[in-house]
Each structure stands twice: as structure tokens, then as C-alpha cells.
Length: 202
Image (cartoon, rainbow, N blue to C red; front, side, top):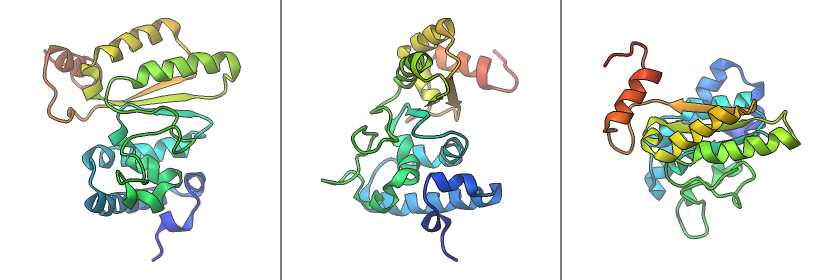
């Protein structure tokens, strides 16, 4: 059976798929990612953990018109595959190949040159405030993991966003209770329990 990722134009073709087909496509993307990273090296778990989330964002939003900001570049390998770079994945992190992180000069879908955690909400907030004045129908989506909530910059940005309250800013917190290693510290523990757990306990 021919793969969906080879049959449709990505990411636009996602919108024509049923939910069952989107599940199948997510499995194909995972397999392709594992094969590519086995050859080129790179961080595997971060992207595997957001496969369905990445597909859903590109399905529901109008990227790159809607701006998608990743907090950690390693999360974005599936995003790269969905945005015209599938055939180049085996060049990941090689000279002349795809960058291991996001690069604005690599694709119009890479709205922000993400590297390591903590910057997505700040960047997205700035874009959202600018678009509110120039093109308020466009959304800005920041995707971050709970590991980013150990960064002071994330809290500063949330504080500012709560004051500015732009209508076009969406912040998605992917709480998997894991950074590059298990999160530690009181802020991480208390924030996770208070905001993301189903039954907060202290």
C-alpha cells in the first residue's frame, strides 16, 4: 500500500484526510523519523512525543500564514517532514543538509529560529501583538514542553501575555513531565500540579 505521506501534498493535503487517515499518516511519519535519525543522528524522543500534536496543528491552522513557534528545535523534525522537507530528512545535521534546529532561511514554515527551551512564548507574544495591529485574523501558536517551565523567560512571557491579552495568541503546553531529563525543583513540581494535573495535590 502506498504511503499517505507520498501521495498527498503536505501540509495542505492534511485537510482532506479523515481522522483515521491522520492516525495512519502519524504512524508513517514516526517510522520515517526513526529511519532518518538512525542514519543521520539527532534527538529522536522530542519529535516522537509531539507527532500527533504536530499533525493536528498543521491540520487545524493555516500555516505558514498562522505562525507556529516551537520552543525546542528538536521537537520540530515531524514539522520539517510535513513542510516540504521529507525527502531531505536523511541529510539532517549534515553539511549542506537540513539543520538540526529550526531556521527561518530554510523554510517559510519556520517562523522562529528555535534552539533550546524558554523562548517560544516571548517570540510568539511579540508576533501576536504585531499581527493584532496589522492582520488580526492570523493566529500565533507557541508549543512548549513542561521543561520550558523551568526557564524564567517563560514565566516573564506568561506574565506579559496575561497583561497584554492578545486574542490571536495560543500557547500549547505539552506536559509529559520530562525535560531532557526529569524536571526538578519546586517551581516545576508545583506548577505542574496546579495547572496540568487532573487532581492537584501538595
